[in-house]
Image 1: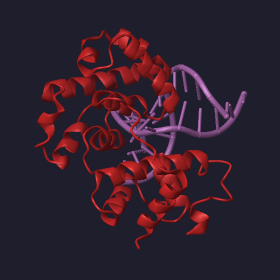
Image 2: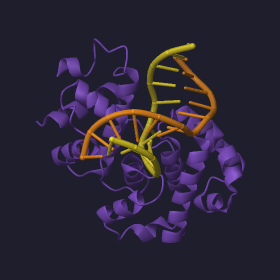
Image 3: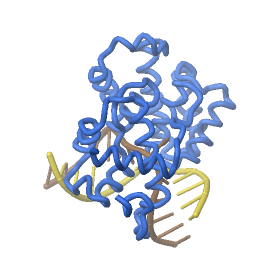
Length: 211
DNA sequence: GACCAGGCACATC
DNA sequence: GATGTGCATGGT
């Protein structure tokens, strides 16, 4: 069996399903994908809670907010001035593109949609791919800091691997499956948080030591 | 107090 | 194309 599938099965057996993305609606997932950039998810939840209380947890509401109001609401998620601009740009894109009726995007090829997202200010590869996979159910493998750290430390990625080469490895090693990509990424984050931290280095990884 | 957290744009070489 | 820097809150 392929190594990456074997690793997935071990992770799943050890941790169980992770129930990602932790968001109630498509729009909440998109908003969270921007707010979580280089930021602890707990802080993102506070920001989302603020938006909810202000009845502004929707892309249409966000484009209508004053910049200062938006940055104040999302303040707990950090980088709030920058993220206010990014979140507004993403909201503006989806409002213009489909008026937040996401079913209208279903006929657009994934690569094309990815290109559009990457052209939006504040949307890089991980944010684009998180939106594609978790909000729009496209089979794109999301790479992040955890993926690279786990992969390099345990030898299935090299130091020279970057975002795109890591994504290519996962996508050619696994069947093209939204649910599999969803769960796998979430499990890698879980492993990265609990065991595969920057320091101290984990001496007894419960997953990889037994492969 | 240091380190970390589900990145990105921009400047500079 | 590679590398460095600013952005900021809140938990450990």
